[in-house]
Image (cartoon, rainbow, N blue to C red; front, side):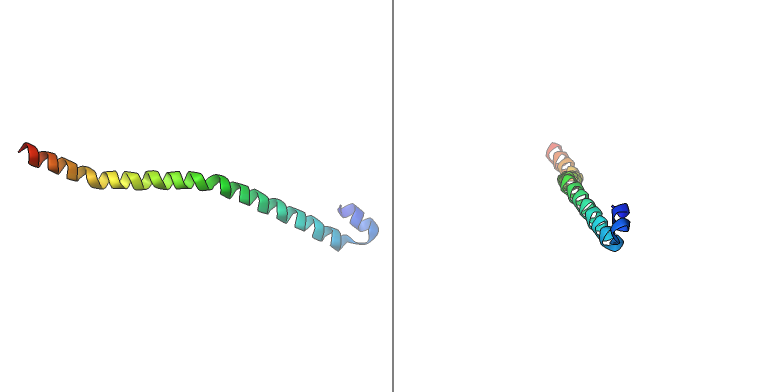
Length: 70
């Protein structure tokens, strides 16, 4: 495209078109990656929060068992 722009004398217009094309490519790749990572992040955060809740409640269950058996 640059060669055609040089031949026609419209190098800056051709460079603008190439820049716009690559901007659209980067934006679509970023959108695709974001939409792919979003469910994985939700699952990861659910696992982390679930592990934290389990770690908080496990000592209470063991205390209740010690109270009932004693």
